Image (cartoon, rainbow, N blue to C red; front, side, top):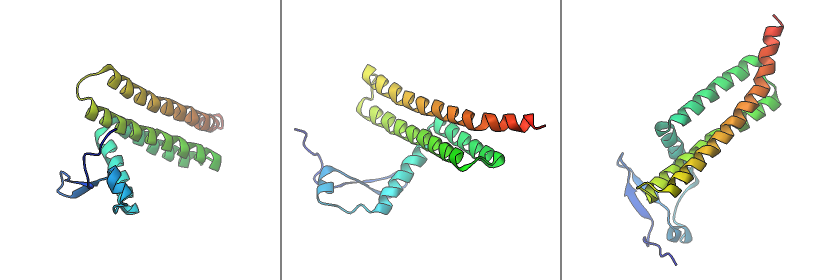
Length: 153
């Protein structure tokens, strides 16, 4: 049986000097204050961390902006927008999960271990699968639109 090492919620200071609250099982059982706003703030911190530290997240967001611009220019219909939004959300979400898993693996396995490598590789593969799926969706939507544009000339 694993025992909790902290009897109260762990409070730490962040690099910018703000107090941070880290939940543990006892704080959850005691229903320690953790507002919905604070939960969204933690999610935003995670997103910005991934954006700041992950090259591929920057690439995914750049492609997202390009796809939105193309969607507006080609005036894609509602079902196409739905496919674009879901594809983009899937890729960005997968990249955030990949970043979280990489951070966790680095924490628990600071030295090289084949299982740590496999975990990171599988998480990266998940992002790749989502990104390839999103590219296929983009091709299905935009290739006919580009073809129609040039065929109509």
